[in-house]
Length: 268
Picture 1 (cartoon, rainbow, N blue to C red):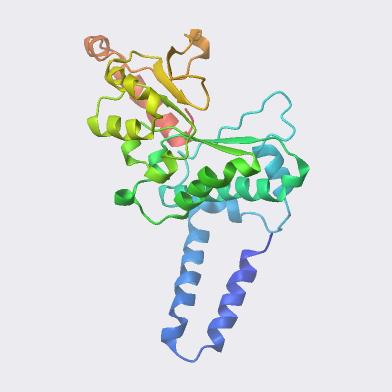
Picture 2: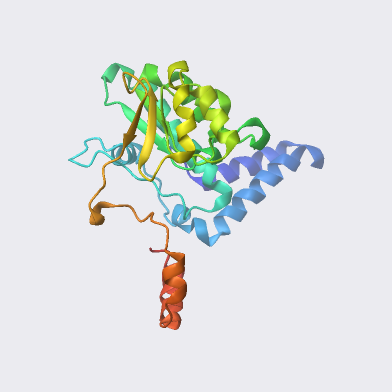
């Protein structure tokens, strides 16, 4: 529901005026101070620069969910530039938006949605690393109930043992690439179907682009190799050649200047 933040602070101020004791008003004062702090933070100026409030939810959902897709059915949401203290909150809000939209749009027979979380152990950590954030709760709910509403959850992580065990157990298809850590291997083995556990011995020896696929996505567990993409289609994920770069020299000043410029501009 769209509303003015100034209206919220006015309501808080009025409620504080009705309270007799300062101790009772302390939670209201903390909330009001936090809102004022966020409003004065330059990182959040894009949220508070407008004077008018408009209902843009339909336009936002159409853009984020690609409805209609117009030949581009995938949305990439980069949260690396979001302040770290609200990254989990942003992901939680987006996840809740997807889940609630699917629930209320069930009668519309809308297009199914696949939500993919990179570095998933940050959002659905195990009990030892849990930080009681709301993002873990909503992603766990999507993993358990999402199929009924046409939502699938894809979890990508290099540390599967840091994932919440209950969420991983809900994954119907597991694609396993090279893992060297014994704890990670044991965790993946426990989540794999019984017939595919014989492949576990090959996991530490898998080469680049090789994987083991098991679960609902394949008829039987298989060892597969991903296609070798053309160079201009590959993501910028190759490791730098340490030996080659250490032997080269020259142009360091210009390189540092360009890096600082990109750093300050926030563009890669």
